[in-house]
Amino acid sequence: VSETKSLGEFERIATFFAPLAAPEALGLTDDAAVMAPTPGFEIVLTTDTMIGGVHFFPDDPPDLIARKLLRVNLSDLAAMGARPRGYLLASAWTRDTGDAWIARFAEGLAADQKLFGAPLFGGDTAATDGPIALTITAIGEVEAGKALRRSAAQVGDEVWVSGTIGDAVLGLRVRKGEALGIVDASATGLLARHQLPTPRLALGRALVGRARAAIDVSDGLAADLGHICEASGVGAEIMADRVPLSPAARAALGAGKTDVAELVAGGDDYELCFTLPAGATPPDTAAAGIACTKIGRIVAGAGVRLLGTGGREIALRRTGFRHF
Ligand SMILES: [Mg+2]
Image (cartoon, rainbow, N blue to C red; front, side, top):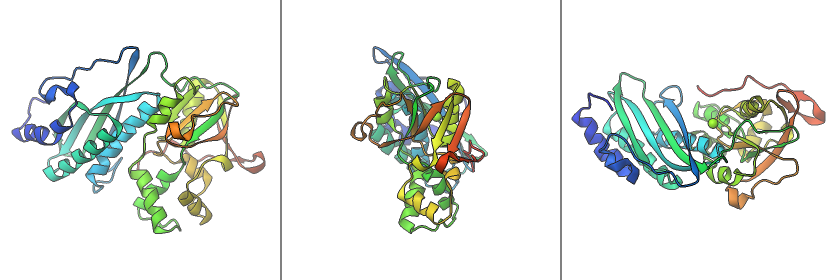
């Protein structure tokens, strides 16, 4: 905790953040939170930082910034098969960040922590000359020994992905003002995928004891599947025509404004990519909250190959795109 708290900071905590606090946070008046794990479960911890001008535009709506920050952390819990318990927030506001901005930021947190069952456990605030830096540490839990891992894929496994791929990278292009040759409603939908991803928590829970390896798609489908391959000591093939695309992405593709290589390289989709033993079926859509699509298979070797019609290899773009 900072030694130089102003009264203003205490007032901000009391006004905006105390209403978000979980019982474990002890009213945000102690030095730390106290949490009891559920018997038979292990604690799962993850953290993610978003910096103004790097991970969000300084004029993005503060509530959407808050919600995305919480959601990207919850997505990491989903990838591990964990259910959320709560989160910690460390924020470095610029000196000109007004109370109105922080009030809207807290409103975003309030909405999503209720939606996902992850209340505030505590945090810290500091002032900076800029840019704004916001860190959430999410705390979850999973049945002991059952966490989904990147390292468990086996040759012969089939590769699955939830939802649709590439919407967020196209949404970022919409945010930058690019025309994608699609109707406004489609562009708005893509922008929403970029600004407000959905952590696949129900799917992650349904994959516990069922999936071999799993990861969330934050760096791009090809890069993240590559992380599974590296950790598991295997390779993977993706069939380009099986990659699930939204109607909006399909329209942009049809208009010649994108290609499959961009869509599988784009980040921020926050879908889950996972492997199942050959012939196994994924959790049904009702239980998982989202449809899943089989897109390829795990093979001997290393790295990810994208295959087009007739097995022709499509060159992958430099992957791991994350920032702008
Ligand atoms: Mg991740």
